[in-house]
Structures are given as C-alpha cells and as structure tokens.
Image (cartoon, rainbow, N blue to C red; front, side):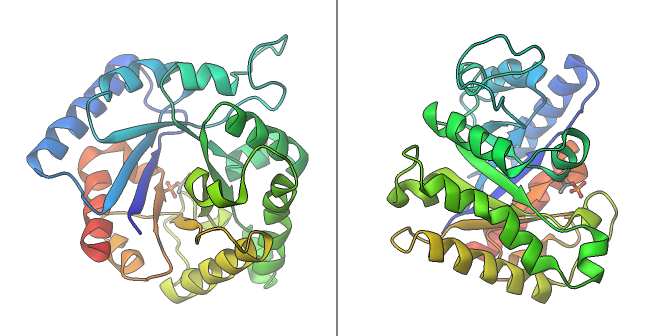
Length: 265
Ligand code: PEP
C-alpha cells in the first residue's frame, strides 16, 4: 500500500504571496529530490480562498490538492452564506476534502449528522474524503480512546447504508486520519505502539462495517515532524501522516514524505 503524507495548512499562509513562496519551495525541493516519492502520495490542503490558485500551480506536479471542509447543506449550489460546496471545491481543483478535523468539531460543533451529510456531498461530486477522528486529553486519560473513536466511526457505518459509496470503492475514496486532539500542535505524541494498536482497531472496525472492502488507509496526525516521522513510518499499521505545522515548511514536509517513502518502499 502506498503511503500518504498530507499537509493541512489550516488558516495559513497569511497572503497569496506567502502561498506562492511555500509552493515555490515545495516545487523546487521536490524536483531536487528527483523521482519524487514513489511510495508516498503527497497532498496539500490550503484554505478555501487559495484552493484554485494552488491547484493551478500544482496541476503538473505529483502533489494532489484537498479542501479542508465542504458544506453540509448542498453538494452544489444554494442560499448558504459562508459555505463552499463540494462542487465548488472540485471545480477549484480539489480532488479530496478533509472532514471532521478536531478544530471543526471544537469551533463549529460538527456532529456525526452533519459529517454524514458532508460525506454524501463529497462522494456525490467525486471527491475523496480524509475523515479525522480522535480523542481529547481527558478522554485519553480516562482510557476512553476506543469508545470515542467507535462513536465517531459510526458515521462510516451510516454512510454505507446510503447509496453514495459502494462498499468496494470505500478504500479508494475514504482515508481515516487518527489525530488525538491533545497531540495536535502541542509537541506531545502517543507512543508508536499506542498509535499502531489504535490503527489496528480502526481498520478492524471499518472491516466489520464493510467486510468486502480492501483495508482502509489510516494516517496518524498530531505533532509529526521531520525528527519523529521515521518512527511512525516504521509501523506497518501507520499508512502515512496528516501534518499541520510541519507542512508549512517545504523541507520538513518533504522530509516526512521521504521517511514514509523509505519505510514503505
Ligand atoms: C493537524 O492539525 O491536522 C495536525 C496534525 O497538526 P500538527 O501537525 O501541527 O500537530
């Protein structure tokens, strides 16, 4: 299975000029590396406002583009002020979207119902989905990680009861990103064996919903950087990384991709 390393740029960079500088560095550094990362897909998720420009610049590069979110209200158009539909982000050049990031759950109170609506909108427009799940520090301390993840994964079970995705296509269209909330942007990370056991559980849980589906890709996210990427990449259960802070510098982002490429090659 080819690994995935995905950069979540969040509400960064500040200006179009800074976006272009980051892209310049990314393109130069990935060219310098020669044959790209044959064992690792690369993707970046810029803010909605930069999506079209980033997609245009990456059109001939082997770096895919993802949105960070889409509207739950409609896959296409409608009177939903402030929202961007799946159709609009696909038209801007995105082929994937992140959904359910903990910052969306925290600041926008995203529920399983709205995530299910978003998943259906994404699939209706041919977008793949990186579904983010993870427990808070309190839940981790109370040893509730698995029950929290199981509750968040019920959205996948519900999805399979709709018509929008065929069970066989699930593994091609859906990536799960396990991101403990307490590890995001904090420099704190769970041990590789904790992450591996959690990923094994996630894979088993999805397999129980969709026994005929090939194994789903599960990424780890939370303070991954150029120094710790090798240790996560060494686990057979960790199929890649969703990277926040370290994706805003081309060198650290590509060093993480190199670590996964080496380990999975
Ligand atoms: C994220 O927000 O998805 C993330 C993993 O952030 P960071 O790498 O900065 O912890």
